[in-house]
Length: 72
Image (cartoon, rainbow, N blue to C red; front, side):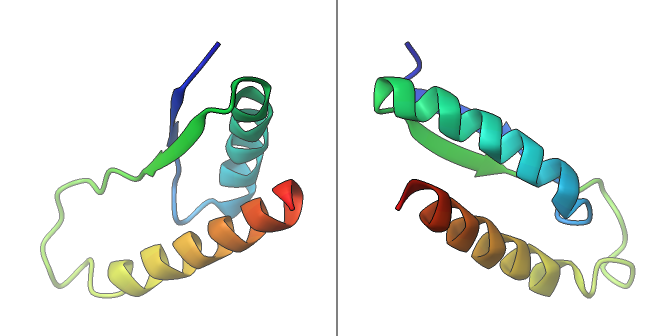
C-alpha cells in the first residue's frame, strides 16, 4: 500500500503528533513502509527561535521512543 509515509509534526503540539504518528504506524505496518517526520518552521527572527532546536530534538527523541515502544 504505502512504502513511504510523510508525517507532519508540530514540535509544540505533542498530542497532535501522537495521533498522526499512530495512524502512520498503522499504515506503515500493513505494507512494511517507512515513516518520515517533517516539521516546517515558519520564518522568524533568530531571537524568536532560540529554543526551537532543543524543542525539536526533544520531540524527535520522544517520537522515536514512542514508536519503538509501540512497534516493539
